[in-house]
Each structure stands twice: as structure tokens, then as C-alpha cells.
Length: 138
Image (cartoon, rainbow, N blue to C red; front, side, top):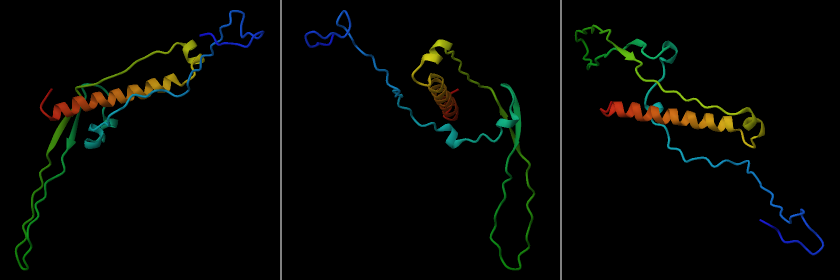
């Protein structure tokens, strides 16, 4: 785009000068909140090393509460040591590359932007798989 100039004054020999301004702000996509992390726990992450691992987890025992009557015979309850198995049968990953020249000359932290987006996509995929499993879809 050429800018007009006053007579006798020129921007460049061809009369064209158009500065390009790169914003340091980035347009971020709207993101929904992850749900699975809020309704599940990650207590066993340190004990899981690979896909296909199985972790045996003890369940909290059920304890019965009964009304007390003065003078009544109290009967102790036997506790059950029930457990269940957590099988790691799903895993996801992300991978991307950034050219050294792009990284050096970028006006935004593109690595951070891409990593944030990848983390969101992993959480979204976990929501889909976890909530799908809980609702009966596999």
C-alpha cells in the first residue's frame, strides 16, 4: 500500500512504504474446563511406570455404625481387606518441533504457546476417554 506524500518528499524511491507490525499478543482459543481431574485422583502416578502396568489398591473397609443402648452387649465387626486393580491401558502423547531460526526470530514464545496448547489437548483427551468409560463407552 502506498502512502501519499507531500510534493518534493518521498518515502522510498518507488513511493511505497508499509510498516508491518507484529503483535506480541496471541489470539488464544477458548477452552472448556477439564472435568476428569476434578472427579478423579492421581494418588498412584508415582507407582505407575509404563502403559500396561497394574497396581493393586486396597479399598477402605466398610464399618457399620449401630445405635448404642446402655448395658447392651457390643459386638465387634470383622473388617474385610478388599482390593481392586488399576490397569493402565491407555496413554497419549504429543510431539512438535520448532525450527531454530523460527525460535530465534519469533516475536512470541512459540514453544510456551505450543506446550500450553498440547497440555490442554491432553487434558481434553483424558476427559473424553475417562468420562466416556464412566458412561459405558469404551
